[in-house]
Image 1 (cartoon, helix red, strand yellow):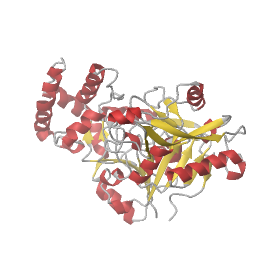
Image 2: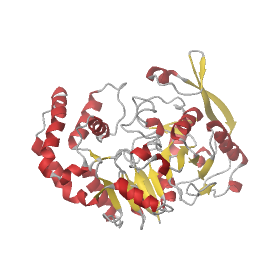
Image 3: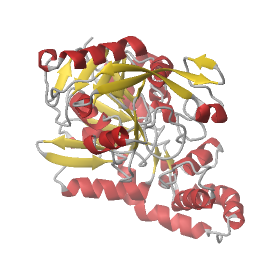
Length: 431
């Protein structure tokens, strides 16, 4: 059986929720492999909406095993809140259908406070646009080898040593930011308050996933954010704290690269971005407003308004290469209905030079100018189309041209938020 990795191919918010929901129905196991509760998506099942941030999408479907991998940073307080909220919607969540990697690093209140203090202290031009949920500081501690991990909660006799090591780094930072030091006992009490709730979900998940794979289970690896927010390959420093490319599915779950059979890149038919950072095709006119209103471009977790612009084939082509994307799920095609013309970015211009990639230098990223191709739009509606025959000829031409520009085929085409309004070209789980 094929195993599938789902990644966002832009700056996130590409409509992964619907596609992941569609795929999770076909999967046996759903794995989150990076990020934290700073990103989210909405699943709509039988008319009921489920807003998930930390939990894998499989939790909303009976008979599926969901796994939070070691690449995720887990806020145990947020975990308790989300599990409780989803249970109140009638979803059964227990250690029988949800497991968390024992070596997952934890997000603590001090991480969230530090995140907020730094962002508030920064000037408007240097703010990252973080969600202030402590994700970045938690990953810093992980790399700095001072993180508290889930397994540490099972060993309270040695937890104090872990806390002291952590505070030896954080208390000087807090003093420098004009914030009082925090006592070790405060951190211990915070952790012990949630330990009994979260520890039953702990498991050696790399071994569990290996067993599932060998038994023939279909595994869906579910990424958060988008490839352009990758800590290495994104628009640094305006990125997230983790690696969001498809390769992280292996490292963030404890499975080898050979377990990743097919990579599906979720790609919006135009481009959006939340927060600060470069955005070459951003629109500041009535077309940008049209895309935002028609596409309901507001964040699932934060509610922030998204910046909108034309489709950037240069950036998506980069993520196709860096993530090894085999096919894309093109979403929100219906948002473009009614436009007289549609533009597509095919390259950049800077200082008299033409580039077919986005440079890594932050200053150059801010100065590149998009080179556009203009295509004729279509007046007919694509909303709700479930076959190629229902699409206007010009819409098909637009989709085919995107395939040509980014160098990979469309595997799925979404024409509305309804999960049934999907044109399937190739089932990613197909062997």
